Length: 311
Image 1 (cartoon, rainbow, N blue to C red):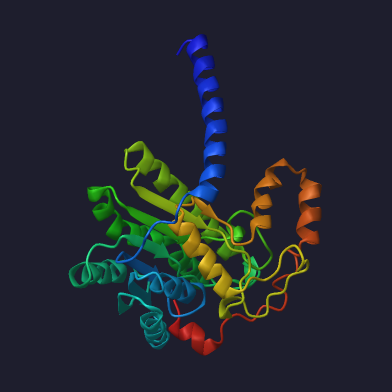
Image 2: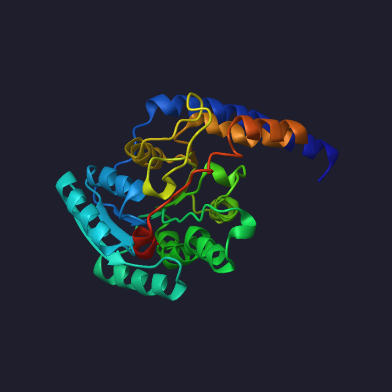
């Protein structure tokens, strides 16, 4: 590439970037959210928390729900509520998303009994809540298997059908913790950072292959009022409140319907990306100010019984 062509290409990118900013701003107010009535929506970790709220929101829009969770009782409760909320149909499956062969087997069952999934939402997650050196190796493996590797298996199971028709939507519940670390969340932060990197790459691969009909959405919540984060506190509640789970569920579904690439239920947390511009000491100063050293100090998490039956 000659110097002139390189300069022209750079100018083209700058001009298009400015145009796309204006386009996105206008579309924010003018575009109608896409209709998901009759769409087959698969949600992992649907028995409670964020997954449950996502299911209920899609139910009210007339979607066909496929609910995966290892907690069969909780999943049945979500299914009943979804039916009452207006879901066109609801199918429940017991699936341990940390087990690759089980994911593939249940996926085949879904294809035969329900059909090809239109919207895949990887939401299942676990938290250990210990300092790095106190986390047993088996728990580290489990966190990565559930929070991250499961996305590999579900994507491999359902993406080919989307590619064949150039239509579909891939969604992952990552976290702000995937953008900046926090005490007692080493395995969790690592898994969520991996989720962000993986789904960004999949999105780029789909674009490069010309499969622009397949959308991707990466969700990055802050702490949410669920059993997963029982005992967590926030040092700056005015800036970083612990979020209401119903609000988060609605925000995620709204973001999916608007084809957003990233969804931040707490917009202020987008500033986490600016950490790369901070000097080392300033980064540590802000980390302390926002409670990253102590937010997990009183963490309790799910009860022992809940841990036994949850993914």
